[in-house]
Length: 296
Image 1 (cartoon, rainbow, N blue to C red):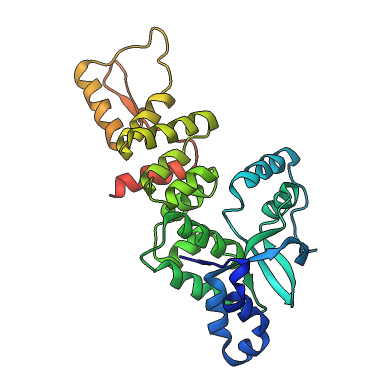
Image 2 (image 1 turned 60 degrees about the vertical axis):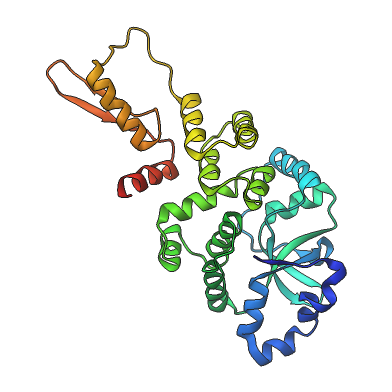
């Protein structure tokens, strides 16, 4: 688990390292990179400058305001990443949307991962080593995957090769970071499993997802029970006068639906015996989940 250091206690922690960082880097840069890769420091917003070469310069103001409202309640869960320029001076590497929303929310400091110059290869090794640890929760793993993608410029495919995971596993983890803070916190506290989180991440409608989340906690639903609930809500209404399948074929269709975990699977038959098995999916992540079920 990444070490989060209170500003009050920075004297003996990462702040002490940053104070003597030039000397420490000269002695053992790899050790410094590894320590910084696993540590989170609280950095005053006034000490962080935006990268002038940041390609993205347009942000949805309404979305920023919504994120700021969330930050006022929950704080910033996913740290930004900055590069140390000098004592008490940092430049943003990734997380400009979070940084802007933090300013709107009136925060005075934010959690941040700190990088030093020319540490690309060592950082990648340190982060991959961190993923191999057994006590990381799914959110911590997701944040590490996101850092590898953003800071080491890795595609999902290259990242999957580096960490020895399926590409669908990477995709599913990254989707967790789009979940609201209260759901992410429940995952951290092990109130929800990775299976619950993956199912909820597939629900785009906010009100429905929030309702399902609270029902899952309240009734201690299993992953399968939650998936069935989601499938029931998302199942398309049958068309009027749609031809009904014979009982034996209806049973086959139900078996396909159970296997793939979705009620959207449809078995279509024509009078001459020809037909189709239709398995719709809404995005690449859902396709990867279907592939995983087949492979497993």
